[in-house]
Image 1: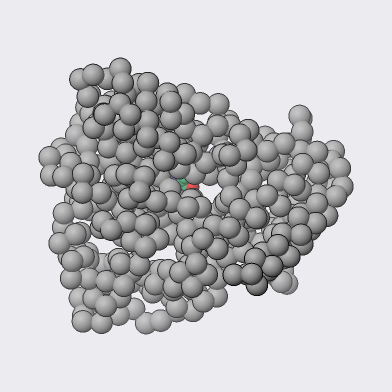
Image 2: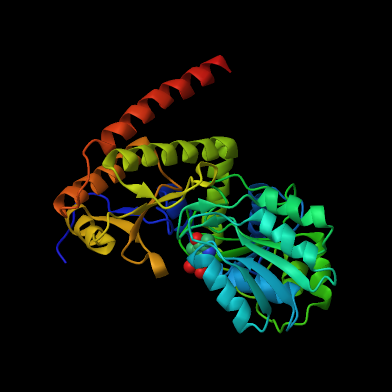
Length: 399
Ligand SMILES: *Cc1c(COP(=O)(O)O)cnc(C)c1O
């Protein structure tokens, strides 16, 4: 490989770009995780993550990936043969469903077309038929990273409540948390699941469960085998700021900085920033004459935009051309969207000019790869960003 000058554009929807402040925070000697200094760090990040999850209840931090945090949510709350209701929103929902089957749960899948969020009414209908309360949990992916479609978790909660059904609500907000509003307590989420490499702007390596009192109660009788993922020992140690086994200490240094950065900017500003980027991106896609995967405007993702290729054109070939010529990585189409879709990540440590560089890379790539499209996508994004930047500043002055 020859040297490539300038910064690589990592515009996949996670891992997202790790900001320098976080890299520097991690670049410190690893400390004794049983020593007195560690407890301070442990307490700081455990408390800080409650603010990010918007919960008063415990948050658990594993050295692990998002997949591990999925497993933790299931094995701590359920028993072999328990029935769980899941929603096929895309590839991540499909993988979580596969995991539940492997763990010995009886899964029921509400099928979907990979272009819509979870259907709260369908969940409500299914629960109201379940008079014997055989369904023990409803599992929903808040933010489906394979399609760029968001599910309305508050609506799912209302649907569950309207039936009076006692099922737990387990939610994967792996690519939503820290980029899109998520209210663990207000929405009555029993286990909220995330990991470090998306909105939290960290490298991969940490998995999280935010655990309600009801989920904790369920864990006392849940029968699935667990050891590494067990909440009980974790919570005992966490109470004093420690962990039962070696934590990912340097990742926790980074997490502490990530939390400071998100709160310094203000969560509402972070969410508004992401909303603005996604609108600008969709305007570019429309100007190119291409189509986004997400069909319902209120469900459009603020984290990424999945774009459908024109019939007969290869998304993977386009991504290859863009990587080769412009040193930018875009997300691949997953499973049945393979080669049909490319995904533009616009999350995390990201600003107007990073977005415009990203969109310029896509527009140049479309031209280089000979994909039929209209020019002017970047211009459409510039127009929107410029006009909305003026609006944002004026509001700030007025405040
Ligand atoms: C990234 C992602 C996962 C998987 O996380 P890993 O850290 O790769 O295990 C699961 N669900 C969603 C929605 C994701 O975006």
